[in-house]
Image 1 (cartoon, rainbow, N blue to C red):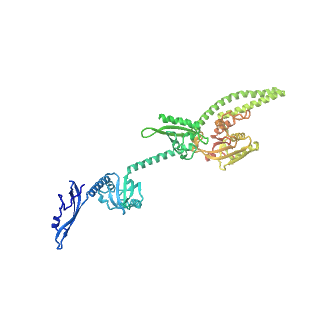
Image 2: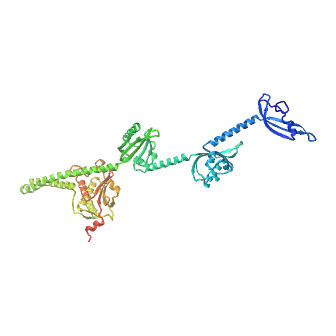
Image 3: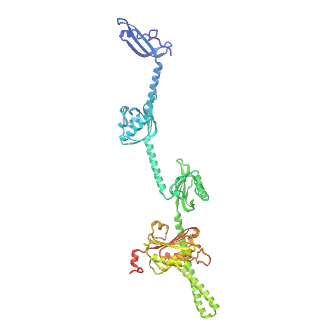
Length: 584
């Protein structure tokens, strides 16, 4: 830009004020205007001057100067445009924008901030503090944050819950930073807040739903888990954690079944997982046998379904396993009961036929005794009679097993019953076997045949003795027991009544799991040939059932066995109807 003419030199506007200002009587003037330069361009100038007077006070001339302020004016114009642009931007942003001074009074408030404060114009906001717009407890929290920022500590993206004057809950994502002057001194703060109320409410609802879902999942008795595309566990509820013999979910997450189960079981699980992940077809209600790390076998009814993202892509699978071990045991008990019933009917039929065969033999032996006189013949008859009688005794036991044993029912005192059994066992068993008793003094009476119940306990004691060939400890325990709904659900033969529980425990070799369900079958025995008929426990079971009771077996290899006999306890009404021995 060319240099402007001086007022006293040539130019359209030169000397504009020299005569006019003198005649006007002014002593000083200042004016900005456009000035035509020698190069034909205009410049923004600042024209300043004053009038010089003579000794008599008469104005005689003017002294002045022109200053080129084009760059300054250009910068001011640009600054004004930028301010207008910034203000337009601030006022049209959906976020709350505001500025506060050192007394935390608002010095700027954009349209969103004005609206959020329930005002209509910025004039209603400027010079006021948060205490003028919010409940005191909210304002105090905001004030404390402001003081931290005024000390130089920025707050970035802090979630704040604000309750406005109308009682509405508003969530904001707030950023507050110190405002500094050119020298770097803090002169206030600048704040921005984004309304995230909808987002926060959706987040809170999602969190509540997740918590609800997790509460349901964690409190279901089923094993519930989720796996990613690599078949690694990403979720495991307490049922699943327990099923793996662990204690916390952290021990499971990120692991595959190969790290949690024996390889053969893990391989079967992996095959199912891959089928679900690749085909998208679910596995529904498949029975799976699981061996826990501690060796315990459990049965699960498993369902596996694909886990998909929002676009329908398979990102893993969800599995649900219902523990049906107890159900499987019940099925086994039911099948065993059916088998025992069938065996009982078959044994009864055979026993009747054998009885019909043995009766004539015994009668014939008695008749032959009258005719045979030599010792050798009599010896043969004696051996023949002994064998026939032994056969008759076996037939009697089989008949008792098959049809149940009847007898005279009367109140039986468990203490007296145990006392007789202890006397026999201590007199006849090896001294290497230590016999102990634990009879509850309040044990109820039972209604039964004293002889038959005596036989039940003796049979169990003999079996316990045979399980301890090198000696050991035999313990008889008697106590009251009330069957609850859970016990009845696990034992179909039980009823929700009061029982007297007889337990016979040994610390012998135990019963192998594969034969545990067969020990009550007639003619089944693990003893050597000639040392057992296999009718002792079957007869015991028949007697107990005829008394309305049941028998349960607990055994662990190498640690011994416990056979539990549950007999219905006599109620007060039953006792009133019966005559208790020794009472009047």
